[in-house]
Amino acid sequence: MDAHISNNNLVSVNLVSFYSLLLLVLSAIFLYVKYGKRKNWPKNLPPGSMGWPFIGETFEYLKHHPSFSLGRYLQSNIRRYGKIFKSNLFGEPTIISADSGLNRFVLQNEGRFFEASYPESVVRVFGEYSMLSLTGDGHKEMRSIALNFMSSERLRTRILSDIEQHSLLVLNSWKDGLCLSASAEAKKFTFYMMAKNILSMEPGKPEIEKIRREYATFMEGVVSPPLEFPGTPYMKALKSRSEICRVIEGVMDTRMNEMIRHGEMKGYNDMLCWCLTESKLSRVQIVDLLLSMLFAGHETSTVAISLAIFFLGRCPKAFQELRDEHLGVARKKTEKGESKLNYEDYKQMIFTDCVIKETLRLGNVVKFLHRKATQEVQYEGYVIPRGWKVLPVLSAVHLDGSIHKDPQEFNPWRWKNKLASATEFMPYGGGNRLCAGLELAKLELSVFLHHLVLNYRWELAKNDEPLAFPYVEFEEGLPIYVFKISKHAHI
Ligand code: HEM
Image (cartoon, rainbow, N blue to C red; front, side, top):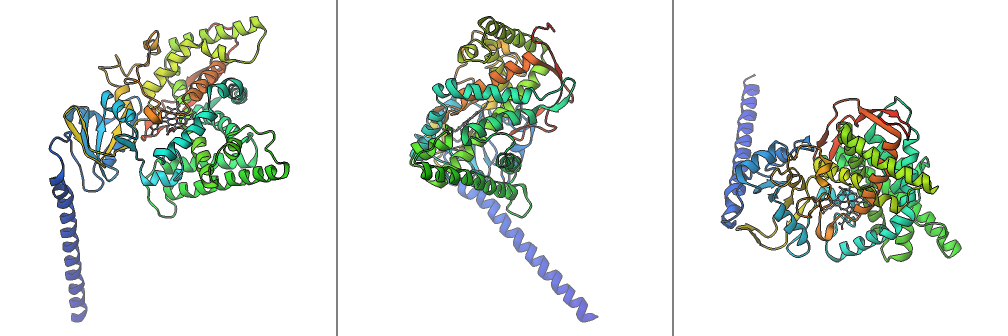
C-alpha cells in the first residue's frame, strides 16, 4: 500500500515537473516570438497587435459575419489603428490593408514588390500548377492560356449560346410556387456551363455528376483549418482533389487515344483540347489548370448569382427596373424575328450592369487577397518589411462610407452614368492577376438574370444572409419561392 502511495506520489511529482517544463518552454517561445524577433523590426511599421503566439489573430480575423458588413475584427481595428495595420495571421506577420490606395498599389506591383502568396494548405488542395499557386513566368503562361480561352471572340461566337442554353435548362425546370435553393440552382447552371466549356461534359453523365459531388467536399476543405487527421474536412478535400484529378485524367486519356487513332482531335472545342493541341503543358500542369479553372469559374459566379437574387428579392424597385430593361430587349428581338440572345443584346443591358456592379460591391464575393512583399516597401511613411504578408481587403474599400455613400444600401442607381474607378471598386482584383474570367462572369450573370426576370418573380423564404467565412455562403442555401410570370405581365 505504502509503495503504491509513493509510486503515485512519484508519478505526480514527475507530472508536475513535466508541466512546469512545458510551461517554461512555451513561455520562452512566447517571449521569443513577442520580443526576440521584434528587435529587428523597423520602427515605422504600421500600428497593430500581433495577438497570440503562432495563431496571432487568425481566428478573430476569420470569424464569419454578413458579407455586406466589415465584421467586428476589421471594424474595431480600423477604428483603433486606421486603414493600414499589422497583425499576425495564418502564422505570419501581416499587414492588413483596408486602404484603397495601398490595395491598388499592391495589386499593380505584382511581380515587382509583391507576389501572390496563398497558404500552403490552399496550394496543396489546388495543386502546385494552379494559377493561384504559380508566380512569375509559370503564372504568365497559364494566364495567357486562360485569357485566350475566354477571349471576347470566343465569348461572342460560342460561349454566349452555351450560357443561354444552360440558363434555360435550369430555369425551365422550375415550377410555379416551388420553394428551391437559389444557391443550388445557380451552382447547377455555372457548373454545367464550365464543365461543358472545359471538358465537353454534358449534364447527367456519370463523370460530371461525380466531379460535382466531389467539388462540394473539396470546397468545404478549402475553407476549413488544414488539419491532416482522418475524417477532417481538409483531409476529405485532399481526397476529393485526387478523385477530381482522376476523372480529368480519364477524360484526357480517352481524348489522347482518339487523337492517336484519328491523327487529330475532331469535334472538340473545349479547354482540354486547347491545352493538348496548342500548349506545351505537361499532364500534371493540364490537370491542375483545368481543376482550378473549373473551380474559379463556377464557385464565384454561383455566389454572385445568389447574391443578386438575394439583393433583388429585397429591393422590388430594382427588380422592376431590371425587368423593364429585359422586357425591352425581348420586345426588340420579337420585332426582328430573333429568338437567341446575341452580343448586341447584351450590350444594351445597361441597368443590368449597374445591378451586377452593386451586387459585387455590397456582396463581396472575394473579401481579401493573399500577397507577400518580395522586398522592403515604403508606403505613406510606413515600412512593409520583406517577406511579410500583405492582405488587400477588397470589401473594406467597397464598404467605406467615405468612398461609397450609404455603403450598406443596395443602390444599383449609384452606378448610372458613373465609371467604376479601379481604386474604389475591385471585385475582380487587379494588376497582373486581374480575374481572367471577369467578362465571362458578367455575361453569365446578365444572361441568367435576363431569363430569370422575364419568367419569374421570387420571394425570400427565410432570412438567410450571405456570410463571409471569409468565402461567401448562404448557410441554408438561400431558399426562395418562385412564381411564374408572363413575359407581357405588368407586376
Ligand atoms: C463574379 C464572379 C467572379 C469574381 C468576383 C472573381 C474574382 C476574382 C478575383 C478577385 C481574382 C484575383 C485573385 C488574386 O488576385 O489572387 C480572380 C482571379 C481569377 N479568376 Fe475570377 N472571379 C469571378 C469569376 C470568374 C470566372 C467565371 C472565371 C472563369 C474561369 C474566373 C477565373 C479566374 C482566374 C483563372 C483567375 C486567376 C487569374 C490570375 O491569377 O492571373 N473568375 N477572380
